[in-house]
Length: 342
Image 1 (cartoon, rainbow, N blue to C red):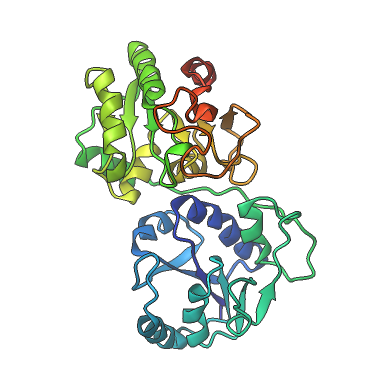
Image 2 (spheres, rainbow, N blue to C red):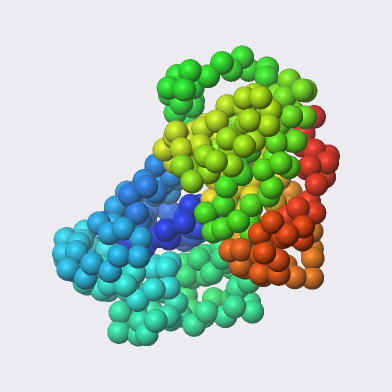
């Protein structure tokens, strides 16, 4: 009977993409294992495009919600699944509760928030050796005695022609197979210190539309203002998908792009996992910690002495000040244009 593994997944898009490297590693170790992933419901479309995942199980709780009784109830329901091991990627105490109540015999995760009683395969995180998020995920697939850092397989989302066509039909897209598509992802959930100026994105859109490219804008409802500013600057010349798609639809549409320019965001990691030429823009975050995992990705950073600061808002200057978020302002549109494919 195949070994069954329950992975408690992260709640961020980019982290879930990087978690695919763990799934690939588990399959390398045991090709017939079944991997179920417990994660927020919105991740189901993303997980459905990872062939290694057997089943996505939606957590009944919203992000940040404790809900002890709901965790106990789901844990008891999962006992009948016969999992041999669980790997818990979040470091919070509450994330280890469901596997504990599911009575899974091997419960693997990093020590954090006094989880000793909930984990019985508790690992101490060596941040000096495991310098990347993806390494920290993948290391949990190996025995504690394994050499570190581990090799990390590259995430690869699998999109079918049928999924692409469904997205094309739904949004009534005119694609002739000849016109090139530039995808712009101007949002970043973490905060404005990770967002390249909309004026810079607009200049890219302006230049590429002049060359005959289509420019598509992606993001959540929260990114509609930024996308609207970009589109207005080019007289409505962009196709604006912000707030109009599910995550799964955004993934399928991104798979049609010929190049992607993105802040350090979940969609950046999605584009990298789609094996697209990605230009990733880094401000307050560290490209060595959460880089796009693709040989086709190129990273742009100003390398200022104050970055990476990991702040949501620039700590040196107030908004409106000329020096505000210089780490991103100093990356000019011309630098990005030079890296775009012809």
